[in-house]
Length: 549
Image (tube, rainbow, N blue to C red; front, side):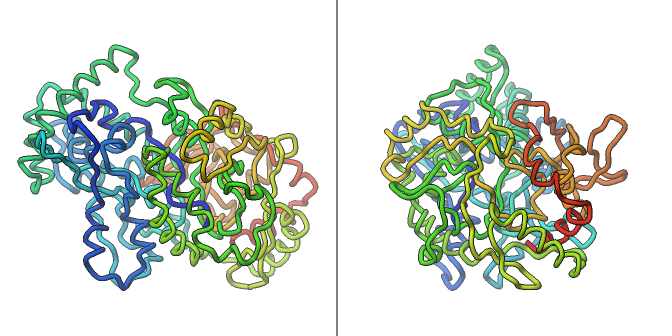
């Protein structure tokens, strides 16, 4: 794997970025409670999988409280209270509320390497631990996002309907962090006049909360939080410093710029990208959609030497620094996560995507292979001759320039000289070469059938639409969607207004959002001439072949 840990997201604001965390008067850090218990317990399982799901990678501290982490008990309790007196303050109600934002409480992790399934008292990928100091006496449970919050996705049944079973390495195509942060902010505004009611509800929802933690919230967190909310109300009432985009999208460039103080809160910052699937990333020579990062002094584009593919630590030093925008880690501390990241990468080295659950016409897929080999392999790589599951055997790491590919240029253009200079001067610059590449690396297609919507910015709902540029809808719904196994992508039909809408009677499992391709950074044009000469029969066969990825 070369891309993993967590694809850069940065929520930009969570609670102590609102309230300020100087109450700890110095640096303090915590540790994922699950990983702490694991280290003293049974180690017969795969520690890389444990880290993927439960490790904090150093992301629970007073530093991250000022950027991405949050007091989970306070935030989630406020969210429920804001629903009104008829909303029960119970764990079941909280689960239902969080699912609206695309958070997952899975029944089963299908590719979990241990016989005993993990348990989740928080959503998949939300990692927590206690931080504190003795002078003054403070104790606070802090939560942040780990790998699995973005890089573990639901699977689908034979009918294309979503299940509550997940696969580590698939993207969470429904996670809507912007909506979650906005809802928590509005919740605090609604309940801020009655802090004692909030504290009482915290003990109702989390009965094991200690007196020390309640005192910390009452004396330090809540007063500063209310003050900061009032300041935001007076200055535009906007809690987010930038947008991450639609469900299943992240804005890593804006997050990194925010960390380097290159954009101000409230500044429009486009450049969102879809969370990627993580299969076969060991064949990448550079990371991210535009190949912006590569190892110091290494070739940015070109095939990876066969011996390097099996080296789990080859790109760990780059991946460790993804924690800077994702978890709010300071660059000088991110390097400490390299050993844990190597464990994760060893786990992901054996990764394969879930098999396509629907029927496959093998004869048509065989014809599709010939179409792929003749038209697609030069950019997307060559695959094994296996009849059941394909394996990527070589990948060209080809950069496709903007003039050739024609897809939305906002993402690569966001890598500006100011950001490159900040990276080179930081701790990251000791390990990473960053560059504006002027285009996008043709992606690895592992697990393609399960990862709609498509393109780097998630602007096309199905692969059928990708192959028929003139039919691409300008608007479509995304989040909590089912899959269409014929068109390979988000199940839907065109309504009277030309919007790709969910099938009649379908109830999405999370709250969907309307994706408008007229918005900056969301253009759905590009990659058109590649299909111009293909017959409908060729396109149909190619779709069938892509089910094997």
